Length: 171
Image 1 (cartoon, rainbow, N blue to C red):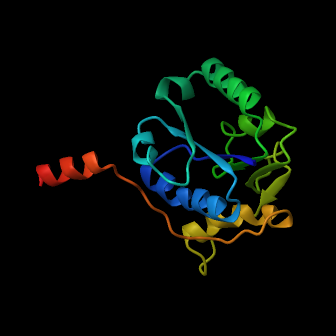
Image 2: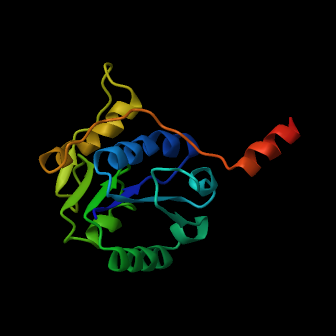
């Protein structure tokens, strides 16, 4: 089994668009176990996502306390032993994930001067001929060496029957 960590902190829209990476990975590597890192406030949107096996959430307090943040990342990286890390943000804060998992075969991030913890840095600058989802899916390019990656630009959310019924009742 291939264990994959996809990192996407921040806003709801960004997380929804980034979920296309999870869908592409699940379809291209069917035995992959996909873990998705995001803020706890938006995690409920992804609880029933068919292409995400595990949500790893961080609270506002955890992300704003360097000690707590690093301790949690260190614990996660030690326990999980990922084969692939895809950091869709590639910031100084998200760089701790690959930095604390230097044995991970694929540590993928955006091409930035300070992104030295990544062994695969993908040029991810906006061009007029690509939308944001296509740019995000470019981060999967290094995986083409070992996997048959079939990019799927679609993203989806899943609701339980109870959530659907509750929404209908409110309407």
